[in-house]
Image (cartoon, rainbow, N blue to C red; front, side, top):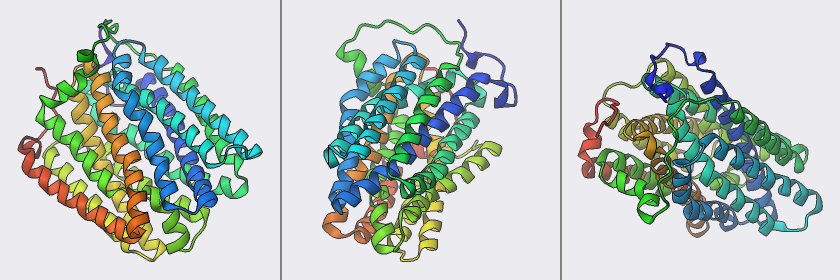
Length: 412
């Protein structure tokens, strides 16, 4: 059976109902995560007052991802990807249902929150790489970069509305953000159910170490893909400050949950504006250098944010940080998808997601530890500086990526 990607590409993504439902599902899922991330961060800091405790939120979310992601990639290449995403969204809803009960009853404290976060991480280990692997099956190949920008805008829209909503809802009542996020996952699962894809029947390759680690082998043999994924891993791992935002909001910028919501939303606002630009004017030439420069700007904006004592300057720095990061995301994801055959996309996207999870969740743990040891201002400044240095080093180590000019499908 031919995939949708083999058919002629109309100009509008709205002519593909499968993509519309995919977009809705992505918005609702992202909304749920962003709402609950603010609520969890604020609740943990309220209960403990500790940067270390905030850092452990990232660690307990990352560990199940580390354990399950490679297996989930193999599963995504063997079974119906839509079903995998639906089941993952329902597990997310179950974890949030537990948090709702915990807020009302108060029986578990910090360790109950960590357990729920670990379950969210396990579900994401299956959902994120599988959903990413679905995208080339719902739009034509020619529209994939534009679809990536629009899909990214869905995530960024949720990251604007979600943190602000999470902060306001938490201020009204601690259970509210968990209830709303739970509902978002349930409705998101329904949207995923409505997606109709045409794709070749997945193979039934036996589960072996070679097949499970096939994504790693595939990436290792392609310097452009390896450089792209590893740059994101190390740059964001060292330069992330998201887990420290409750401390910046409360202790440095002297604001409350609403201010934390604004800080969490600012990078998404920048990314959304950039996603709108990239939807209208797609990146067609010099993609390698544009990705490198976007990561450098990300690092510099992190430094400005870390040194700022003014809320508006902090918001502006995070806005620029998000805009630069969105350029990197669109280029990186398009490169990975276009250079990977469909029968390998689950495993390759699993490795890519593991790198993203490492840079985000483990990066939160790193930032929390550095914030506790050095103070958040020093930790943020050091992280941004290391991001710039890593990017300059990668420009030397991966010349093929630096010289990459256009998005091309790898037929090898």
